[in-house]
Every structure is written in C-alpha cells, then in structure tokens.
Length: 405
Image 1 (tube, rainbow, N blue to C red):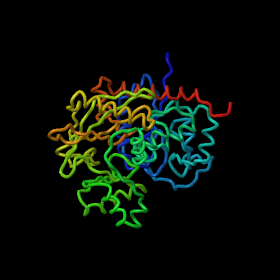
Image 2 (spheres, rainbow, N blue to C red):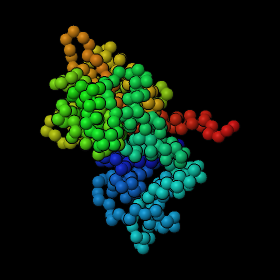
Image 3 (cartoon, helix red, strand yellow):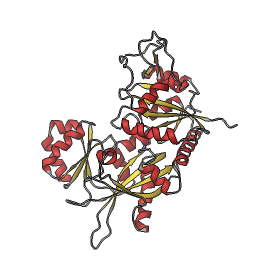
Image 4 (cartoon, helix red, strand yellow):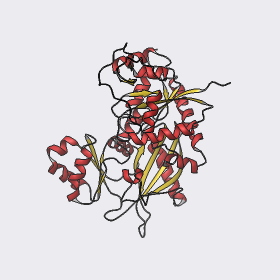
C-alpha cells in the first residue's frame, strides 16, 4: 500500500486576513482525500503562537482558546512550550502534565528554531500547505522559515511571495515586463506624516481623480479607499498608513463616474503555468472592497464565470495573466486581477493589470477554485495538483548546489 503523504495545513496567522485563512483551511480539510494524505492541522494565533492538535482545532472553529501564557522565550525543558521546529517535526498534540502553567502554545524562538531546523533533515511532515493570507504568511516570511527547514510547501517561494505582496515592487516588475498598468505613485508613511501638503501636490501632479489609496503590503482590500476628490484624500492616506509604512496611490480606470469591469484569472503551474477561464466580479459596492468580499449582504457581489468577453479579449487577458505570474517568479498558484475600461464608442476598451495574489482565498466557493472548476479541474483535484507542483518544485531544488563544488 502506498504511503500517505504527511501534509501540514498551516492556517491563521497575524495578518488582518486571519479569519479568511480559517475559512480557506476549513474548506481544504473538508475536501482533501484522506486516503492519500495524513493531515496535520497547524494553527497560528493572531499574536503569533503556534498550535497543533486540539488547540489548532479550537482556533479553526473560532472558539476562544484557554488563558494565554505570557509572551516569554520558552525554556527548552519547559513541558508547557514547544518550538516551531518541534511542531514541524512531530505535528502532534503535545501532552502537558497537570502542573504545567499553560496549554501547549508554540512560541517562535527564531535562533533556536532555525538552528534545530537546519540540523533536522526530515521534520516529520512531507509537505506543508501554508493557507496563510496577507502579512506574515503570504509575503515570503513563512516561506523563508520553510526553506531553512527544508520542507516542501505549496505556492510561491520567498521572492515570488514577497514581490506579489508588495504592490509597489509588483508594479515595478510588471513595468519591466512591459505589462499594461494604470499610473501610480508610491509614498512612505513618514513622508505623508511629515509633509502631507507636498505629498498631495505630488499625487495631483502625477495622477487624476478618482484615485485608489492602498497599503502596499496587505490583501483582501483591507485599508483600501476610493478617493473621488481632494477632500477625501487625507482620510484615505491616514487609513492606509495604519496598515503599512509604504502607500500606493493609483489612478482609477475610466475617469470620474466610471465603473470598470473587474476581471480575475486563476494561474496554476511552476515553470510552465496555465491560465483558467476568466471570471468577472460585479461588486455590490462602488468597488470590490473587503465588505463586498466577506460581509453578509442582502445584495451580494455577483461572480460571472466565464466572463462575457470576445475571443481576442480572452486571449489577451489570459496571456497577460501568465506573463504577470512569470514576472513575479510565482509558483504553484496565483490569482491575477485586471480592470477593463467601460465600453466606449469608437474604440476598444483598454485592459489594465491590477495585481497578483499568490495565496488567494481558497474556500470551495472562492474565485480561484471556482475558475478552475469552470475550466474542468475540481476542488479536490486542484488540491492534488498543487501538492504535486510543490513536490516537483522541491525536487527541482535538488539540482541546485548551495555550497562550492
């Protein structure tokens, strides 16, 4: 009998997309083929504690965890604590004697954990699916830890994850690849705080209203505002400043009063990625913000799969999606988003690349899996394919020497 793959499902995290991650992980755990995989849930709380076993299940279900311990560096011999490396090595619930002061919370002691990871050739898990969205999960940080630990994982590597997360760096890579984008300006929070008048003049000199103000490093439209005129700019900049030190200000597509079409493509693969059919989101608000994506509403946003586009438009968008994936050195999976001008008399509407998301929402009803479902690849089969791609990428690394020959 073929040995099951020991798969860690890593979820939660410290980002503003913590709850989205729980939903994605729950969907994967429900759908995954248990005949092929021995599944180990691993949770990360909002304050960075790592959990396995029953504690991870509590986190996944949204239940309140027992009293949290103080955030101190754990003693190696303290039975109440375990290192991250120990979790990856065993992936099992940790038993605690009754005298232990706290439940099994896993504190990241970077020096000890990384040293242990380097000494351990096999940490118990064959592969990890890091279903972490946003900061500290989708930005290359967790990918770096897994690289040092030598564990195969689903999705982009350190560079691809970091580039896909940082909207400023992403846009620079897209520009270098000659991909069409709307104009933008990048400013630091410190620049805005110290001289907002100068920043406003720079923005208005470079861009035309309406604008979109975004934190450079965040997802799920958290902290994003649409700015119709000068009166709304300061509020939007202050909001985005709460979430990142770097702010991206983009010119809206289509001009005042315009509502561009919001199109999405799912990309799958490593060195030879493929694009899915194209989907369209008709938001229930002025644009597809966080509430449009996740809040209950009497009039929810409407996904249209496949989007109604001409054959040439479909070809152009799918080609651009693959090019964007390669420009960021992405791997495994990504959703690539586009904006299309409203129809205009006498000319074809322009299509602009908006962004890439290297770990998109992964519930069974999220756009990424739905786009592949419409392309002929079901949810369970998609999970299998992503695991295969992670294994292929890990095997490819064996061709690389990290020491002088």
